[in-house]
Image (cartoon, rainbow, N blue to C red; front, side):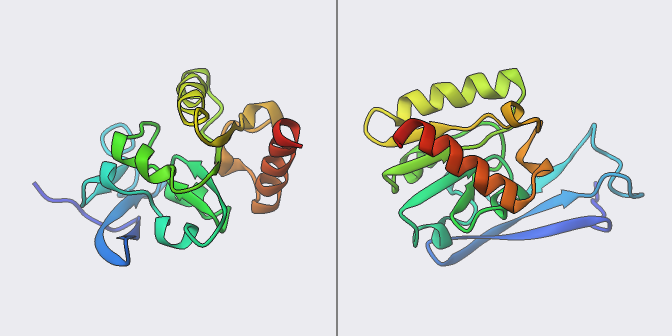
Length: 161
């Protein structure tokens, strides 16, 4: 078996200032990227052990948790869990911050998962779940960085003034 990395983006992954692997993202609509039914991402590391952009986000007092790498780029303090699921180790890492914003995709199933996670984290942290569909977006991918930051600020203000 071989994998052609043409028509893909490669995202290096660092954790605690060490390079631990990379994520390959196939680009839809390209000759090698049209395998979305088979494989959208390829991870060469154990993705449940870290959060994308964790080292950079630690410089901030709050964090925005999203699903994917590209979504994390919308925020200087954004981290990604590398998918809709989140491991126990990632939950421990996210509690590095006292103020946590969740901004997962807006579909019903994902939002149900996000609310459960919010309720779990909110026991000992300030935590807000932002549903992008309430603002007309299916996903943070569809927002500009400015729109995403404005929406996060509005939702935080609603809950914590």
